[in-house]
Image (tube, rainbow, N blue to C red; front, top):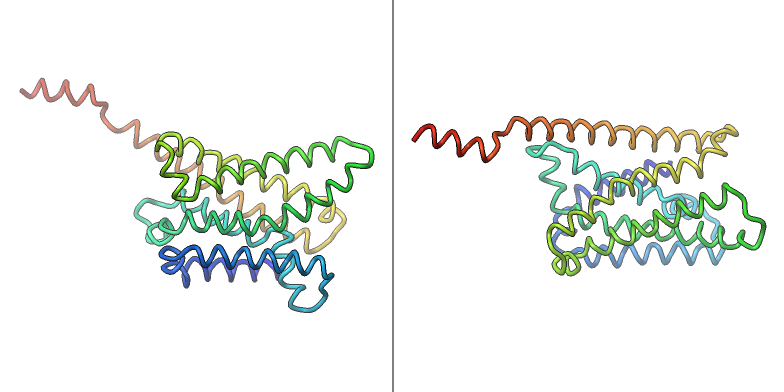
Length: 239
């Protein structure tokens, strides 16, 4: 159910709110921060009601953030002439920032639970989980901060593009991280965990296939393009 809700909200942002999100992103950022604040309040107040049962997983399980990150990533593998790419590209940066904000609830909740376990004995799984989570958090912070225009304008285009390439390992590490969190429950037969693993795997797998296809297509196009030196030689020969 949380995937259906997250998908509905993501589609609303992508289609219904695309123009206002592009022109006036700040209210959306404030609204996202407010929702994360509501999540923290509900955790502290030990909220228990039907509405909370739908809302809490969106933040705690990172479902909404993952789908928004997925939209941002998939835009990059769409055909240049695609109408969907044309529609999404103007709000790609805003969606990325919103995804980072929504991911804060997940990071704080599980980060605090990990910190509480540090008083006990260390083991390989805990060290690996903490290390992976730390890397993902740092990458998200870098990508999120550089998504703001004021930061982007203070950087050269070449540096900004190199930093944005960190999105590839970031997205794949998110999948690994979620898989590690869900694998024990899925192995135990938890239907929600099994469904979650299936959904995350299908989405991430589809992205990897499309990314590889686009990389091969770009490489083929570059190889087929005449080099500048060859153009000069041909022009000289024609003269």
